[in-house]
Amino acid sequence: MIAGIVLVLTVIAFLLFPKAESNVPPAASTTPPAELVYCSNEGSKPCVVSFSLDAWDNMFVNLLLPDLTFPAFSLVISRGGEEAFYECQRVSYALNAAYCAGPKQPPGEPLTLRLIANKDQRLLAEGSLSIIGLAFPTLGVAAVTPQETPTVSAMETVAASPTPFSAFATETPPPFILPTRTKPVPTFYPGPSYP
Image (spheres, rainbow, N blue to C red):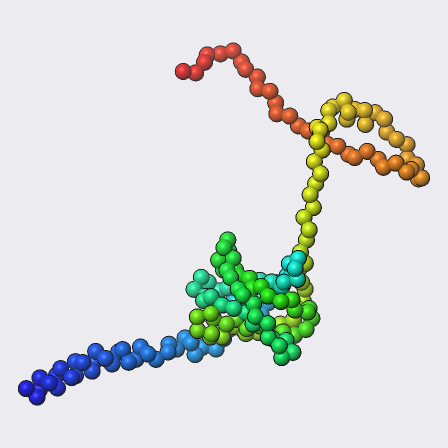
């Protein structure tokens, strides 16, 4: 009877022993963070591709990530003892790319960038960089489309009556108008029809 009790306690101890080990944090969390640098052809990832601004002076930090298993993260930028937090998300059409949005930082000053895992606040990557350039937003340029399509006779009139060059001309020259192409009219040949 005593041997049976000892045997049952031994089996229970073996069953509980692996569970006790599972509470130990994995060795991967003790690995040092990756170095965060500007991206290069042979460089490691994660890395910084560029900095840019939108029309409302929000700064975007564009990043390349090593692979799809890279955890969700936030960016913290430290400058002169102050920290700024940036929300980050993956780009839907390029899953190894992400961008982080937050307050504008001045170019040329050294900044400390840290990628922090959202799940467990673990430091994923860290680096000291200076913003070497900011891409500013561009306004869209819309081409004005003429309401009427020029005819060949209008083109011949412009070509037939050139104005002489004058250094003191006050009139603006007529705009250069490209002729429009039309689709060729199909030619039908007599022949047997298809069933």
